[in-house]
Image (cartoon, rainbow, N blue to C red; front, side, top):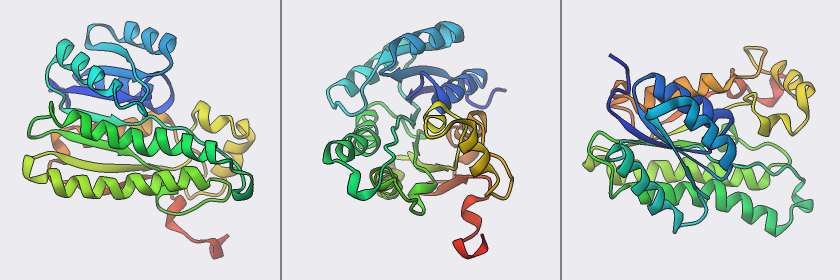
Length: 249
């Protein structure tokens, strides 16, 4: 039997990268998926590719009025929401002194507030046995230069996950955070292309960057009943980046 058979999921940031990989994997494992993103054309194209088990809904995760619309769309198409994958996120790369307040606020609104709004919005729909998966980062475990806003938002997601897990456990809803390292996506490539991937890959234990499907596989585990006793936990997939410290380099 497929690992997610009969489950309804909302995946944010689903039009590309990790989100698209997760959407493909979820559908392959039997889930029905609402693909949520601000990128309408690629989102609709992916929904068409995935067929009857997928629908696309425009969603700006930082806008609280759009979340109930997305939840209702998922319920109307597929039924109550069993899984929320809070994947949408942005990265701003700049020194502390060069980070404008507007840039900082934009990252926090999408990454942190979007995650908060998503968790809150699905509570009216999610039954016992539900799973909320919040995508943080290795920058939610340790800092990296030039990522003051991104790191702040990802640390916040880590903490919010633990609070939500404590509050929702009595309802049978699990909440966990995922902490990817450098993953080969358009967002990461925008920092420096293949040279950046080569540079980072050489610095981790597995000597390569990760692929979106490797994060998708972890999300499937957390969405499935296989992780039924995991909540408030941090699941790291970083090729060994956090297994060391600066003095080892």
